[in-house]
Image 1: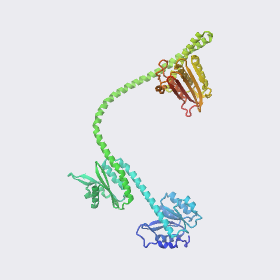
Image 2: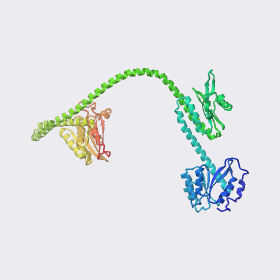
Image 3: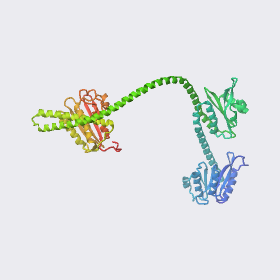
Image 4: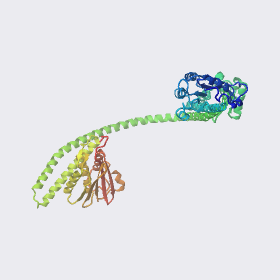
Length: 589
């Protein structure tokens, strides 16, 4: 940068000089430039500038490295004037990155000055680097320099004010939780004295709390109940004797008016509760209190008022608790007597439960034994009936009918045993599926033919051509499901049964519907038909155990499917099964 640049010899500069230097703390401005003449003339101009009653002071750095060293010891510098090209072509830009990213200094306002705009184009620089202004040295007059510095200082001051408010709010947030946990008024006042000094950074100052207290003669006088700093030793003394006269007078006036007074030298805060009366807190410190301090104190007091209410409520609860202690004592004796009765009842229940569990185990063992003992003779009877049916001549219809009755009874008894055993295994939780590909349509047809043969007087219509070719499942258990549903459709039909069986595919599901035109199920009982041992009000004339539909639902759910029912009294019922074509992905079934 040459000495002839307008920055140093512009006519506007003559209007900016201020006679004399104010005796105020100057604004430090970091000037980073490798040209000593720039430092010299900038220092001359800054000497004549003034803002907000404070002069300017230049902090000199001849390179980016010098600037890093300066900032390491003075992170509070508000404004920096940076050259771009110094020890390297982008030394100034790298210094910007160091300030923002490595030092984490977002408050400093950075004005980039360059004598070679082409080396660092303005558009690219302001986008890529966190700078606050960009000036070419050739266009930076003294007036423009002053305007840029004042704008930067205002921005820095606003940022500092915002940060100070944020820190004050953080102190309020951190200070209030311990107060809300306080359970006595004395402890609350002591903690308030401690926390008030932190909220407004009362370093070097004092806090005192006063409230009326009774003397030995019964009179009530203002007394110091808590204090810090120079008032820490005044606790328990009358305020008039322990405090300076002006401070004692300010406290007395606050109690008389019951109003807080926020001033520059001291702040008097008043809190009042119905049960404990008023308490005054006074803050003093060497540094004057400003408007920001006053706002923080007002906000803190608004939050702390809840703490006073909490203490009053807690003390009310203590009084209520004392009144309840006698009732608790009386109830304790009564409960002790009842406890013995409960223990005796518990023992009886446990013994009954043990007997029930033992009975269930014996029941399962008995059913297993009976099913084994019954299956062999039933199989023999069924086989013999089949052989006799083959030998009977076609003309002997009566004999064939009796053999059919025998086979039907055998099949019913075998199915009943299978249902009982399956239900017991389901209840015990040890029923596992033998999953294999099952020709579901063929299984439906086979089961339907068995019922046609057993009930020749019934009409069983089949429409399963749209069922998928294969379903993953346990063929025996699915056969038991079909036998139960078709058997129920026939059994609960009045007169000649008319059963309709339809099947189709619905995406990844096989859907089978078994409908009848029987007696139907009352609407208030539809939701209970799958309950174990439930039998409807219209099932009295039909034999059954009430476990068939419950077993059907359990088996379908084991396959990862679902079963629903639609029914109307006098119109019949339709049971709908939805089975996944493939096993569930989680493998739990």
